[in-house]
Amino acid sequence: MSLDEIREERENKVGNIVKYFGAIMGLFYLVLGASILFDKVPLIVSNWVKYTLGIAMFLYGIFRLIRIIKK
Image (cartoon, rainbow, N blue to C red; front, side, top):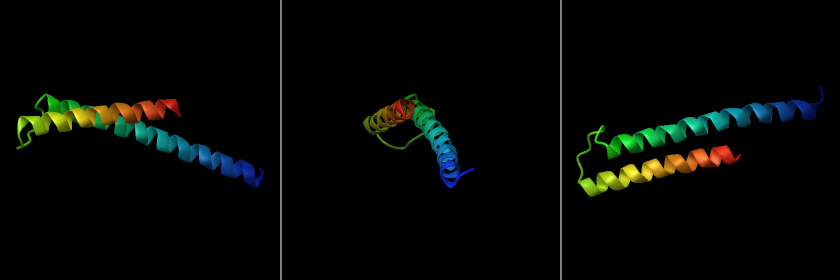
């Protein structure tokens, strides 16, 4: 095995780890956003702040998942 093949193999392994971690975090943001929107997470703020935060997290989760899928 040459040095270039070893580097390429390592980059592929690191890329896979980053991809899976990004997908897990995207799902986490989706679930957290939905939980905030449907009052599963108690927050002591006004309703408009709660809905704004929930929508933002939900949309950010979708954005992260789309970005991972496009790679």
